[in-house]
Image 1 (cartoon, rainbow, N blue to C red):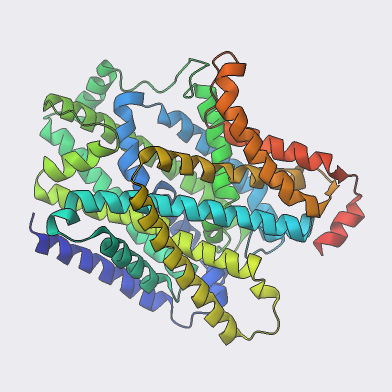
Image 2: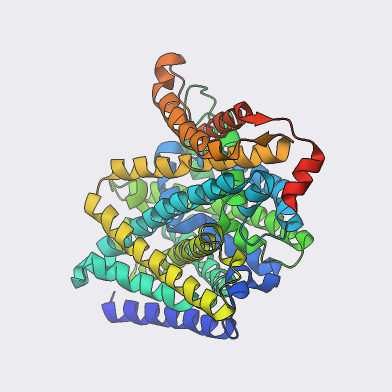
Length: 490
């Protein structure tokens, strides 16, 4: 396909995002940047969150898992569905009760200064690692399959993409992202559906025949009953539920959109609607993966994993489908990066710098400070993406993903302890507990096969991590009456 056509389409795509940003950021304030003035339509938030949750890595990786792991990933998706109900009916009422801008402010209400700062820091570390890693992996796919042939250097690609994100998020923040994510989710799902339909037509099958072919090949297996396998169905479902509670319900990026909705009832509608859409969309991604696996086999291609979808889309199918793939990939990339930078800006300004509590700064000074933080995180994202490119080692990337996921364990433990118990803790010791818990979980994970008869932890390690944190907090706690808790929460 002509480079001119691809560049023209991408520029037109960005122009639409810029226009949306221009209109949604008029009369923008810090409150609209952080919370969209609590006026975001819940239906738009629900739909746009799909793009944020899936990310460009999901767009590439989930179809690639089917060849080796069949539909086992759907076990995790079922766990997600359970977790979204916990978020909707346990965590969201809590956030609306305190009228929070940053969800980690709850930890200050409940425990104190050190717990609050620890929770916010865990989020900042985890989201920075996770978001930049996902950004790197998607930019790298674009680089390898499109931009290398034009001799465009990787650093320039990363810089341009981050500059684009800065342009349309710099002023409007969450108020803008609610609308841009909705548009980008639409394009991502449109690309997904077009690719599925084209592959089915290319293989001269109906949807029913494609379904039967996948079933006969064994790719439709959903449940794994090997208890020692990391993909054992109970591990995956339970782990999926805890992933949702931790990485959605306790994540400022995901929750800043939910709490931008005016009422709790509408926010809960958003979460339940979003959960149903997520189950359906993930199943379509797996269905596409099954079709791509069979299609590559029919062509005698030895391609699998993360290379499966981009290789077939860019090197086998017609140029127009390759263009659709690029648009879908970009549409999956931007929501996971723009929301992360905005959420990190909000958390750092509110939780670390204490901007909302600083009465010495007027609105203009706060806005200038927020913009400096936004640019700083954008620069950090660029440096981290270039660092991952320099490493260029998938094993190291996997380790970094594990480290990022461990940081949610302490968050899970802190919030669970605050919600379930009425005890008070030694607040200044909480940071030590939250550092020791992931370290102990890591050792347990690496030695489980030796000590537990071959048993390997899967996604349930997040719950174990949270349980270790919870137990540690119990050791540094004592009884507290309701009056004391109420006094701290005022």
